[in-house]
Length: 387
Image 1 (tube, rainbow, N blue to C red):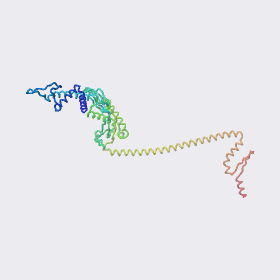
Image 2: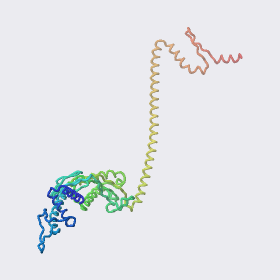
Image 3: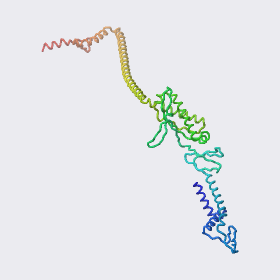
């Protein structure tokens, strides 16, 4: 409405500045007539604008025409001018529209969608095209199992127990509060195939809840509470998106987030005790596994050491035996050449360990083929007697 008023004012100023135009001339006549009627001007004997002359009174004397006689005719003309200006202004305003950032403008022409416009100014056919704005980039959300009464801070929530109760694969009940985030990615499909208002919201809510119940019904309670939360979120998002794509709703599922996943309130205390017992069991199991690994590692290390030592001993004994066999073989050849020398050598080698106990010293005399034996025991006794 403000835009229309501004446009009318601009048109009036333009017509006032251009009196040579028909509308401008009528505007000036109307203003002049209004001044005359309200005492700010005098009516001449002859009104050149309307071609009327002064009339005689009852005595035959002339008198000036009434100032108010011209007002109805001028008013009709001025009303016509103002009507034309208003129509032009209205059509001018209705010909252009602005699509704000984050929105999409869907153009209906005679009830049929003809185009979808991005942000910015655009032209439309007045009184023919209708524009519907869709928040295509805004992330919308649906809450399941609870409702946000006051975003806060602090935020206030209200539970919805009918929505939050789900049945698992092992026939147990679990309470799940979750959120569906989505965008109206395709405004044309959304406005064409998806019902609006409360009916559309109920349809999307029922569809999403049905898919979530289907997924939770295929998972055991313990897995829902512990390790499969991420998997449930992913499967729910992909499943809901598949259904929406099949229905050609133009809705894109951004995310599915599980807020709270808990057992029913009536058995929550007992369930906590069971979880504590399981945690204690897992702790003791881990400690036993740790002790078993330590003992096994130590035993395996000791066994490997014994095996290595035995292999080294066997290799050493085999090497010694092979050396002795090689030495005996070489002695056999030497014995064939000089038996007496070999026998003396063997005798000396074997007596080498006995002589220190007998206190006998073997002296090799250079240049001679004999060995001299010196009895150190007798020599020491003679030395003591001489002293």
